[in-house]
Length: 138
Image (cartoon, rainbow, N blue to C red):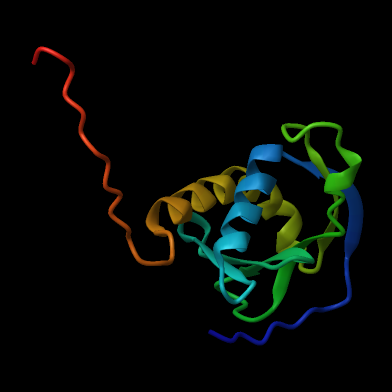
């Protein structure tokens, strides 16, 4: 799948942190993606998240290919534990981005969970054979 994405001039930018569970799940899905990109539909908000190694961008269904919000410059190396929040830079490109951000922080993790439940490991199944040993006297 290929999508062209456009950006306006950034309206605002600020340092934030992302919950470790959300960051870790997004990167687990990314690691399983053969294309290096994950498309996450956020149906409850009519948005699409596009995740790659550099950033997470969020497109509103109303504006189609225009980035509304981007999460960039993740710094997982700055945390001292895998369950610690990950610092990143929030960039707002559309006026609606500011009002949608609070809801996005709730709905995006839910959409990631839903997507991870639908994806199956890529590859053939294998049957493992184990020798059955009966206990003595049975």
